[in-house]
Amino acid sequence: MYLHSSFDLAPGVSLDDYKAALQDFTKFMQSKNLLVETGPVLERYRHPIMDTDDGRKHRYFFVMSFSDRAQCDAAVQHILSADPAVNAAHRAVHQDIISPIFSCWTDSS
Image 1 (tube, rainbow, N blue to C red):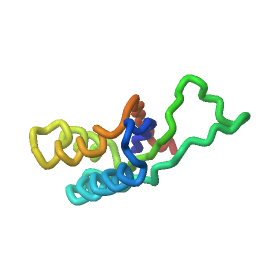
Image 2 (image 1 turned 180 degrees about the horizontal axis):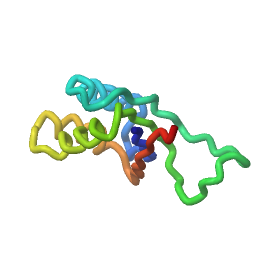
Image 3 (image 1 turned 180 degrees about the vertical axis):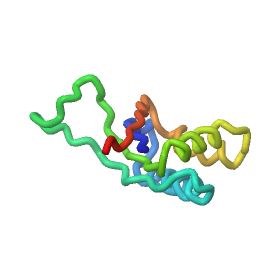
């Protein structure tokens, strides 16, 4: 199972700082066996022919990978918990983005 995140950075947030916060969050979730990996943060390239999504103007995206639906659901429950460490780790990556769009995907094979 995969989570695709498209977003823009909040004003004043550097891409390097965001990448560092996302890496820390990834390590935190991996330590709890709630995430397989997070791919790199990629910057959108508006190709004149191949980029046909005119509805969204997001500049960045990344993909998180989960082993299965159960791990994904457990990650969501963990993030929704009242655990201050979880809240701080998630807030560190979520507070620096604006206009996020999240979508889940699964391997159909």
